[in-house]
Amino acid sequence: MRRVNSSAVLRGSAAGLAAAGMIAAAGLFAAPAHAADPVFTLGGPAEIGLRPHPGSGAPQKATLDVTVDNPRDEDFTDEYTVTFDLSGIAGVADVRFDGEATSADCEITGTTAVCTDHSIGGSALNSVARLELTAAKDSELGASGDIKVTGKSENATFTPYSAEVTVGGPDLVMRPLGLKQDVLPGEAQPARISFANTGTAAADGVLLTLMYSHGIEIPERYSNCEYTKSTGASFEDVFSTAICSFEGSYEPGTVYELAEPLTVKAAKHAFREDFVYRVGENTQKERDAQRAGASFTKGSGGKLALKKVLSARSADLDPWNNQQEQSIRAKNTADFVAYGASVAEAAAGETVRTTVGFRNEGPAWIGYLRSGEDIGVVDVTVPEGASVTAKPDTCTGVTAAGGDREQQLGAPRYFCAVPSVVREDENFALPFEMTIEKVVPQARGKVTVRNWFVSDPALPFDPDMDDNTATIVLNSADTGSDSGGTGDPATSGGTGGSTGGGDDDASTGGTTGGSGTSGTSAGGTTAQGGLAATGSSALLAAGGAAAALVAGTAAILAARRRGTNA
Image (cartoon, rainbow, N blue to C red; front, side):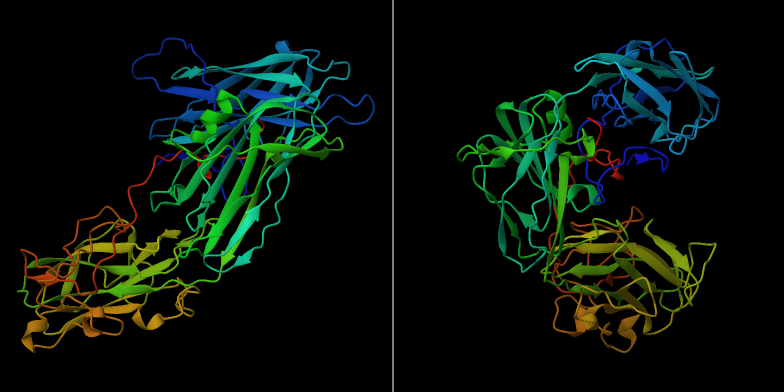
């Protein structure tokens, strides 16, 4: 997945959720480049609206964040310059650089500004500079002009970018909903969404965009709305989206509200949820940005309407207020159930494959949507006499006491990060390969899913930690005993067992914990020693992930829909 440099300036809501307008407007023409030279794309918002100059006192500032996109994996470290042609906005706007948000060396001379820098991060959207713009003192309402941006380097080519700057315009401001934050699974609330136009001109049509996380349901399907549903288990793919279009003129100084409220319902698997609601002008640019390349289905119900509520007092143009978001917490729990593995016989020098991990038996899904932090860790202790020869990429080899270790293969213990999203039906499978260096009858290892902090291992959402630990047993057939351990489904009535033959598949569906060597099916046998993972029947994981943006943001991703200067 493409990343956004820490200095990049696509910033938005805490949830890392996106808004239209910060998508780079790539130039149509570029100078020819040598085949080996990289091609970088300059970008930023296509349009910037300015609050008219008040005549006396300080005018309201707007910001223009200019970025450069490097599609290649490697960093570019040669010197490059970015030139801003400001002649088109002479008499329209005044410009200065924000020194705190601009790392490049920038200088303005007359109607030209030049920034010099030496680094463009690979596979990243990098910040070039942040400009602060205000309406010129004698500028007229409706005055506009273009800022043209070009780049130059001895060993690279830059596609140009331009932004249109206009004095005045509509300013659509979304009003907070004030939904109840603490709910029960299945509880529904009416969402009386309203917004105001506090700008200087009417908006020709509006677009209402709703983004809601996996544990929220909106049952209505209006004919002037289109819908897409979350499909994946990654951070970027746990949000569904509804986009509703409204025709007509929406006048300045007026508040509008949905003629009937939407229903915001906590699903039975709800836990910590986010509901984002945004209003923008009904333009092709806004629609494309909100769709973000996803496939939508048009609703088949009645038409959702807006009604005029009251006149709104004047307010500053503010491109950050088009969007609001609401946190919703459902009183719910999840049950992470660990599963281990067993091999009946394995000779010295033999390599066996196994898959260990855990299943979320719900009812709640778990998503740390705001922080993006890992939910926890799967702590794997390797049985005596075995040496790990292949592991998932998300697993880090440590010492027996959990300390740092340079050599990753052959470690006695592994910490495998559990990412920020685990769906309610997910199987988190971790494939390992182990070589038997010494035959030790009933050699036991351990699999525990827990918090990162060893001193406080409990997962805050999982009230039953008894089933969070399972065992790995090598050469279990010597004494005929089972492969059980604390929390091992093989010893608590689950299907499967040490001799295989079950129909569980620990590598089917869900997140696999990395791209390392694939593991054996849980409950089945391998061609290299009959290794079989114990555990109850595997739950089907979430479907394939939808295309992500970037975005990120950011953040996510580059976040897909951030509040911007559109």
